[in-house]
Length: 339
Ligand code: GLY
Ligand code: MN
Ligand code: MN
Image (tube, rainbow, N blue to C red; front, side, top):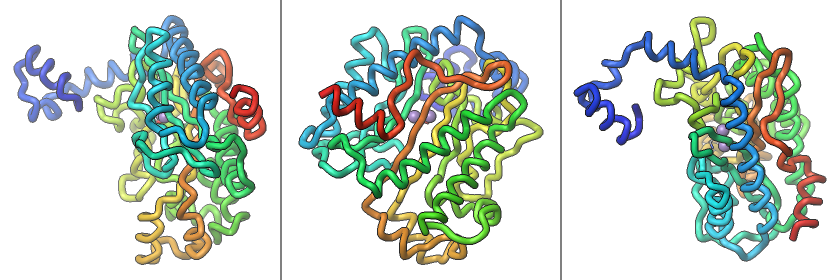
């Protein structure tokens, strides 16, 4: 119960005051519901597919109309209207921002500028409340610069890596850290990181660029069941999140994947000026970070690529009828051909 309306509803039903609701919760009931909702049955998968089809329409609307001079709010409004026009809702407030480095950055009245990237993270929610959650990051003028491509291709590789390895029995926490190691390797090649890769990830140095987890459960809520506390949803006796390390403490999903789970795959690389200043001043993880080079990216923004995956019997697959373009060539072609 983290939403006020739910707290009031629980008060009406049970007479438990909102401030006492957390401690009054039944852990047995939470566990039972998490077990029930984690594994999606066939009808739920159909509904999630529908939500992803709407997500595709929302994202391709954004890609089609984006051009220099429009405001972020204008494009975001068209994206939201697309969901509404198919009888759906948005699954969370749409993120459409040239400041991709701001997590959940709201669209502003700023005009879209040629040469910049814009991050679009949005999803549809069907009338039965099933959600989708995709992110694309694309160039405002339809053409990536070389510098943007260098960072983008790392996120792309991390995104694809997760798809290759996600299957029943694999801990999502292990996939997250494998992605962090891949990202670190590639950032070392660009001269942004340095030192031993395993040590850098163990120290949490990658969180300068990826301060969140690889993904979360999705279903009837976009961060599915987060009102039961993420620790009860994404973790179990075998997998506990480390709460003492920046970045690692934000993981939402760590436990072993099972057939029927739906999770997001959403790596990102962000250049957060305040974080760069802070870590540089304190020397945090200085043995793994080339601050002088990182500083030259303070105007870069952030890139995330996100899709929703269904864990199958022996692997995983994307939800949705069509993939929203995300390989750079496909994005550029789509934007050129759909103006
Ligand atoms: N839009 C929130 C998320 O991707 O988790
Ligand atoms: Mn998202
Ligand atoms: Mn997500």
